[in-house]
Image (cartoon, rainbow, N blue to C red; front, top):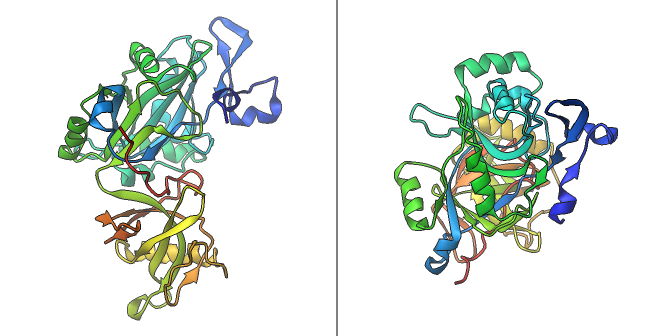
Length: 362
């Protein structure tokens, strides 16, 4: 899908799609709606640092553990937040509403991530989960905002003052974004470092941060595409996986999954088995997972090729999980995998449950 086709203008003249994006009112022209385009966020591909010879051609941003959000600022003081799925999540984060007036009458579409910070100032997805899913419970969202406030980091601009920036290189978009000076009580624009990728990655490790996102300076904005022009590196060696089966537990785990069988997509789109995960759950999490797995029972193994796992129960691969592991075997299997969390915020299509690409060649 080309950027031109991915950027879909919608508004009052297209009522069938009004629920997917909203028209903006131009400054001083309440009768003249300025239509903001619906833009799917560009996604990064898991990988490694670019080769040293290419280092000056890349920018490096800290990878954060939050909820991706596209921010629509119509220029009339209002704000619209959409998740990767396109869902309107504005009401879940009422403390971000003042951002609607941060650019005055200039309409814009921004790319960012909503974070919840722990006592050390680091992003905590566990904390954020208490805020997610409250878009239809504004009263509870307002109460939670007082105890678990969120912070929005803005790292790209895709549309500004009526002009599409999808075909503008990252370096130029970044300069335009920084010129907007979006700094406020609940939002900010973190810096990006050009070159020095090795030092940037080491700094994220030293500060206990999730990782690094490497962005090619000449990269265009590709809506909805998991692009190799953006590379994400996780310090935790954590990956998204799809659950394709499970093994019955024994003893005190009778009736519950003793382990889940997980896979990742190969380049052809098939699901490749990468291992079994049997540790890392609390009792409540294991019980919740058991109920979800029962509803996805299948007679067909989703993995290709079929793994030689005795007593396996197969399920439709609709659940996304995140697991931690030590390293991979040459065959791509995860060593010492441990369960981190169920990603109820992601569909399989939205997940990064892909086998890693080899490092870029020089």
